[in-house]
Figure 1: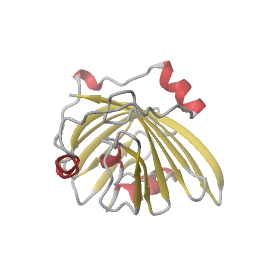
Figure 2: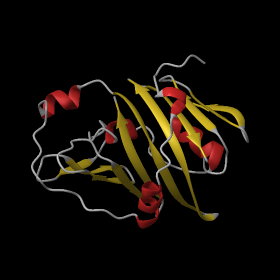
Figure 3: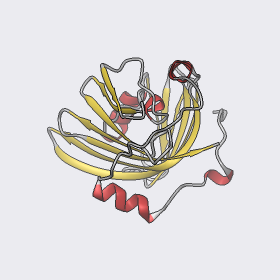
Length: 202
């Protein structure tokens, strides 16, 4: 499948021990100092979705079978609806890639081979038993509310502080004077949890 995004050379993945500590601690303070956005909120909300990010994602999933947890380093490229995600240490699957062209999602891993589904969420659930709000994440990693969000709140600097989408609720952590989050903490009504650290690259 053709690659439609650019990662840094050799898909550099962030392996900082700071992220590992953050994933365990699941803590952090949200800054409230004033931020001066470079563009208006309306312009930002309507801007095309496009980014390259790296970081670490940890998932705790709760189901009838019990609770399971895992984590992975990731490199994610997004252009509009299309995206490509490469994962290492991928939730028990080994090296894994997920591709979505706006209609079909395809997951390839050393353990599962190649499988496909009509949405990224169904694909991840079928392949791993994990659930995560993948369709909302392209907006959330940029500090933007997803079109399907049910509710949202902002902090004193007018940055997105929380977003609710169905059974998922996301909390956004920012560094001082930055308008894009460096961490998302996302919980599901059933107790499942996703924690995602984010490094934004040009």
